Length: 156
Image (cartoon, rainbow, N blue to C red; front, side):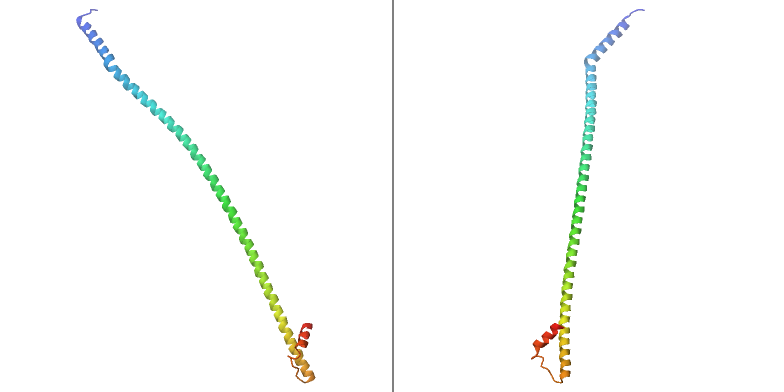
């Protein structure tokens, strides 16, 4: 194999090209690769942080839902208790009103019975006076004998 000037020129040209690439082009390529690696690493880290934040947010949402359900259950329990209290109060009020109406009706019945007795006594007294009048065939003055009639009515 012969070394000639062309081969030597090509080797020198190739060496200059390699030196030129290493000195001027290679650093820019390495910088671009490193920047891309940093961006990818930052993207992966951001994705990991986002995933962790999402997990935390899911946990917070689950906790808030749990609290909301618990509060809803408490509200429902309170509403049920209030409804029971209202029903009990209404029942007590209805019973009290029934007792009051019953007492009023009983008082009215007693009053009517008393008036009926008084009316009956007066009628019996008047009948007794008329009967006595017919027996003795003379008229008895009811005003003059009021005490006697009252005593007779009380006895009846």
